[in-house]
Image (cartoon, rainbow, N blue to C red; front, side, top):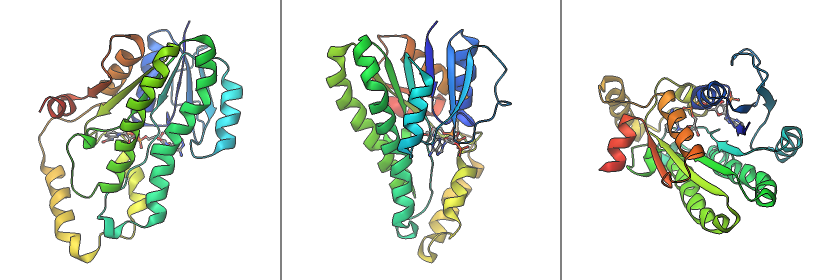
Length: 247
Ligand SMILES: NC(=O)c1ccc[n+]([C@@H]2O[C@H](COP(=O)([O-])OP(=O)(O)OC[C@H]3O[C@@H](n4cnc5c(N)ncnc54)[C@H](OP(=O)(O)O)[C@@H]3O)[C@@H](O)[C@H]2O)c1
């Protein structure tokens, strides 16, 4: 039985990916900053372990506790909607620490065992904002575009070792806790000069009837990336994401 380790399983995509792989008969290591046993169905194939992807000690402890794994999904991520002028450098660093450097650090941590066993899959969850820019997401988009570039270069150097690396690009998913979690980084509000723009963006989302991405779409794309060696490097996830990727 194969084992998958997923980051950011306390809500949203990570929780659904964990549920999906459990249902499909995998061993799942669901990691969370604050582990909770009540989020996923009890199973002898499930382990819930603590992980903060910005903390090297936490990564080290997790890799020791996890034992051998076959697949890693770098899903943990945070967002921020604001004009660049309203974004502190501390907030920008926090986004890069989590979304970009957290992904790089987790990847680095599993590579020795993957290389020794000449196998393994790493799936990095980025976003379709890297395909079609949206307003007020410059720093967030930069963190995810960096992961795209990192992943595509890394795939070349890992291919000779039998290790696959893939990208899953979800579209807009208002049903997860992503927006709510981002709000703590947005308490200072939008700079005066950008309030009209921000209002327009938020009204547009509130009134939109366009298709959106659901957590199940992301779980399906991750399943495809992990289990199908012929899967493409970039897999859009969600009806909106598929349309954007095709455009
Ligand atoms: N929702 C969208 O519209 C959307 C669209 C495209 C891509 N994405 C990306 O998809 C991924 C999942 O997002 P989601 O929508 O499922 O959001 P979510 O519900 O907010 O889930 C994000 C997860 O990341 C975890 N996390 C945050 N910082 C962490 C850290 N330092 N170490 C470990 N875990 C951490 C959160 O855990 P805590 O409970 O500890 O905070 C949470 O479990 C993110 O990478 C996001 O950028 C989201």
